[in-house]
Length: 257
Image (cartoon, rainbow, N blue to C red; front, side):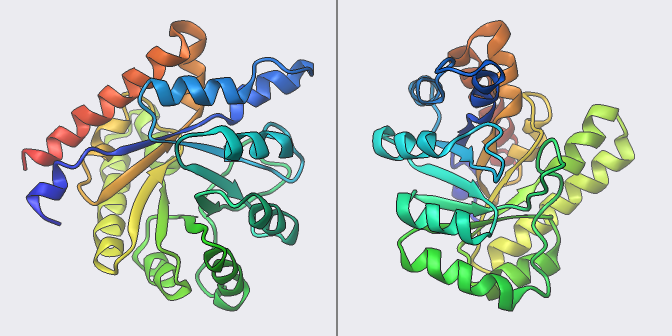
């Protein structure tokens, strides 16, 4: 990783799932996830992320169709590696498809996708999406063995799960923060050495994002819940701009190394 690369601005993907969560709590059309996506892009988001779950608890099929048709920036479609979701992705053809674990009983995605030892199960999925011109990403734990497995699957991108780091950050556990940040550094460095493009996300706030953004190998962060939550108080445009500024501040640390 060159010094010039370390100064490269991080891309920000804004996840709009929880705009749809609020809409679905009452039914109807409002608030509109498409409008949220447009505001986020105008405020500086480089892309939009949305997760179509099996139970359609937030984003719905018609949301994905509209996002693909109307967005002027890349759409990152988060999905479980099920036949139903793969078929929908192949029909919609988003810019990227991020394969994530999914359990109906979980509130949000907990942990990365298990890919070690699952080559025969996941390789056909990665190949099929890639052949359709969809950039495949794997949402995974930050471990070097996982980076090896991702490279063997032929996925061009991995998104490192930052949840454990964020939990430690929230708890103020300095020892755990250091351990988890080192895991992220080690996985990002090793994954990049294998030719993988490295993204990260899950649970990041304008405070916890700064040390993560300082990891020079990272190219993109995908952030949703915190931004949408802050938008209740300051508005979505301001929430996106504040996250963008925090990321840029963190990335500046990497540039000064």
